[in-house]
Length: 628
Image (cartoon, rainbow, N blue to C red; front, top):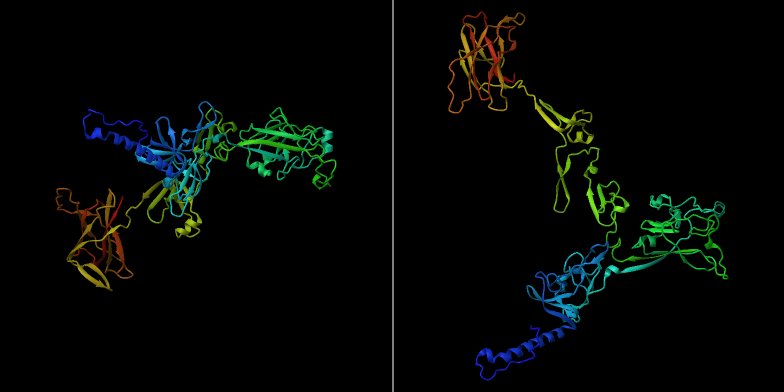
């Protein structure tokens, strides 16, 4: 659509060459005029509205979204309700993005569109700027998302448009009245006027006050309306120096809801003593005046007789004035203390942070950027700096239990899980020590299946595990048994190997040492259980001396290991006096072995030459591996 109205037509002149460009020149000019008029008619058909057509816009701008003019980029961009500090002052001013010019009506290209500045238009694309359904009513500029509209009035309030909705049953597209607000909302304020309660919140004796020349409040009651001694605990020590009384704001609900005045200097106190119909007088404020008003409350600076905010003759011990019969003439006068102030709509504690104070025992510190002492009253407003003292978070008391925080999720939540709370030693050769110990709780004993009188402790901190297994009774049974003139017998249903009397006999066994989990330095001894058939049940007989030898075959190394060919003698003292059919256990001399060894052991009896005139039975032969 052309923005220019063609005033002149360039017709074909004599002598010009006749071609399509020359002949169609007046037709094109007429076409431009026609399109220009059509665009204006379309705008008129849409409603009474003012447009900035073919305007440069930001690429991310969508139809229906509110815009402002960015003088730096020279284009319309998404608007956002915001304020910013004024350079060189401690005041706030509206940001340029708050100056709404209108709504984007149509996008013609990525950076080209029509902006409706004022008026009424049918705009179905208004849904691009609204979260949720589009409802009838006034819409304000969002303070959270650029280019968005909200129905609830935000603190930074910029009225943009009014949605009328569809005007008939045949149309679904809403009609929108575009009327951006141009006034400065930062300067909006509300005026307040409150009558303060002109009596003490306690007991007052006018006779004592007249005699002493000063007024006092006894039996102060912080649950009553009125004035309290400035030293009352309800004020938490916030009374200014020299203050005599403080107004009990907490009991004046309507006033406490809009306290403090903002700015606090925008306040006046009017005092009508109720004498001779003089009326109210504005009293001087400040430390040298009669009253001080600050963010913490209202403070009366004098207790002199007749200079307090209640009648000097008020006697709280008598019937209240409200119960006294009214007299028509003359009209009764009463004392009044009137508080008048204004409060900014924006920039107060209902819309922005006016001060910041850490909670009791909080690890957070707040410091004023001007260098004032951290967490002091003077350092809680203005430009602030937050600090975090994590040392304050350490509780000296231990927390029992095996759950701990392990992870912070993307939703800023802590995830907890189980960890080892401690280690407890059970039965066996395992020894547990720790740098810290504690007694098991009753619940922990129950969970572990321990009796309530169990005295075992839980080891915590740096844990040391010691496996004190000396391989005691780690017996290795024989894998292969070779008999040489030794016979298998069954005596009294007990199987055994017999070394007969009168002949030589031997038994050779193979013992396999496990290849792991035993240790680096090992010893082996041979344990044999023998019994004799000689002697009687009363008279013992000495068993014959027997010979024991061994041969150790080391675990083959890489490339192979040559087999040994000779045995080594072992001390084996079998010459023990025993009664008939009595079993004894004899251990041999120990010898060195290593993991993975194969040990061949031979036990021999020279029965042809020994003097034991009976058979010797062997019940069992095992190898015992141990750590020396």
